[in-house]
Amino acid sequence: MASPNPQSETSTADRLHNQTGALEPSLRIYLHKTMLLARRYEERMFEEHRKGNVPGGMMQSTGQEAIGVGFGTALQTGDIVRHWVRGVSQAIGAKMPLGLLCAEMMGKASGGIGGRGGVQFATWKEGGFYGGGGVIGSVMSVAAGQAMAQKMRGEDAVTVCYFGEGAVQNGLAHEAFNLAGLWKLPIIFVCENNGYALSAPWDVQTAGPDVVCRAPIYGLRSASVDGNDAEAVYREAVSAREYALGGEPVLIEATTYRLGMFSTGEVGTLGDYIHPDVKEGWRQHDPLKRSRARLLDEGIMTPEDNASWEAETDAIVGVAVDAALNSPDPDPSELTKGVLE
Ligand SMILES: Cc1ncc(C[n+]2csc(CCOP(=O)(O)OP(=O)(O)O)c2C)c(N)n1
Ligand SMILES: [Mg+2]
Image 1 (cartoon, rainbow, N blue to C red):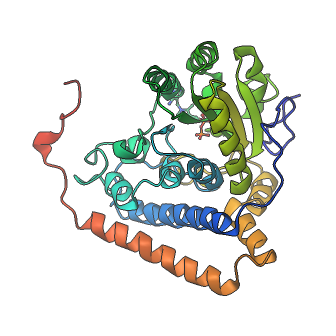
Image 2: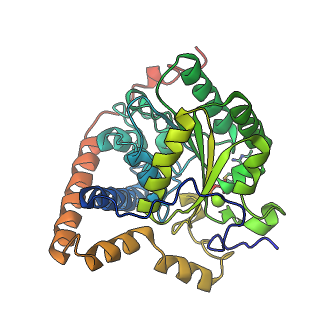
């Protein structure tokens, strides 16, 4: 029977490769510090949201940072990133300038798309980061189109498309998988399987055992990976990128858990549908905590490094927030610019 617990073993995944050697210490530190930045930035954005400085609702990636960060770190210039709505870790992982992301989330004119999009549609076109979409699965077919354009233009680049496991139950996912396999598109589908689509656990979403079992029927390569381990995700991403560039599209299932709310609109109801033991288990599995413990244990970082990186990160976040708070609001006459023109 399918398990609602994403920590359970997936059944059908072929790992892309089984690289076990350690990554360079500098890369491991980079992955850790980038996850730290995503975590502290999102915490600060939540505070600012409560103060009324981040309009609209916010979908957070807290607890899922290892995926956007691990994957983004393996990407190259020219690659395209599409996401769903929990875009902070993917944006920071893709090296989107924090000031641009912050201004967008605060609805400012200096944001990536002039403050229109918030986190859901946060865009940094120059860096290939094209944002997400509110209709589940919709971005997957658009991403397949972008990968098709890359292929037709003969670019040495791939498209990465992140989505939740809920999207895989939607028809658009199957159309995107099908065309990617058929046309051998340079695309990597990355499913962030956090075990819940809003309050619906896996076993009320589908009778299937996992996400990757769908890969072979569409001619996709696949891998399942611990989505709370940025180093494991990075390794899988490097390999997946090579396959996708060579005309073998990939579906990755990264098991994870959102430590925060479904959205900031969920205040007060979080957890009613998740057993306290499950929540506690995942808190112990927090990607940032695990990474910190591992680096300390292996002597790659010291407690002093940890303290100074925390301070450095708070300062970086503070600069981005102050700049956004002090930047002008969009001109109302520009409201419809770029919309249905
Ligand atoms: C086609 C469609 N159906 C329903 C919704 C309402 N809805 C918004 S988020 C969500 C759950 C998404 O779950 P998942 O894809 O697993 O992503 P997660 O929120 O867990 O990251 C639902 C049902 C929607 N946005 N689009
Ligand atoms: Mg989900």
